[in-house]
Length: 114
Length: 108
Picture 1 (cartoon, rainbow over the protein chains, first blue to last red):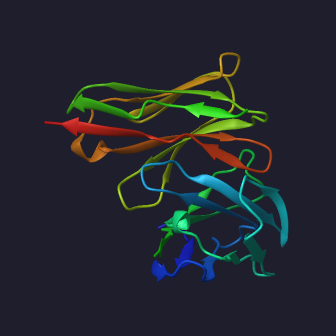
Picture 2 (cartoon, rainbow over the protein chains, first blue to last red):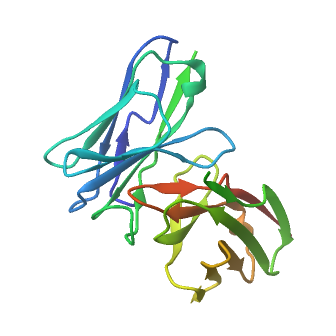
């Protein structure tokens, strides 16, 4: 148990729809990162939030957006879903940025786009 | 560009030793993580190397050479439960970049 919880665990959406995934970080952690992991691949960094501000972004289009709330929980929003968005979406929390801190992953949200 | 390379698959025998290599070229480097990921599960932390050299933690050890852009994970006394994917990840500037993972199969 890492103390990082994600919801929903599984969902199916239709191409063109929008989806919101949620993450509650480990108690005391102020940084949340989101990753997309396609089958058979390593996780790909989407973005990171630190104290409610985005402070790092990977190579993902603007239709991938996020929020971090005052309690440090976070949302990942994906608009205009495409078939290739089907993947496991992982949330990871840490204290401070990625540098030098152990990062704890949630169990992930499995998204299938049909 | 940024590249993190590791072998796609490896097979080893129960009780043996296996070394999983990782080479990287990234624009920022603060350290290197190794994670274990069983099928259908989230990655779990194994090790984090900042300085050159070998760090040992039970059956698992991790090595880093920053000048060579090279790391390896050493697993000793392999057990069947060690069958999993092993992910190398570079701790960069405000992000963490992963390799594609090495799928390790441990056979009796």
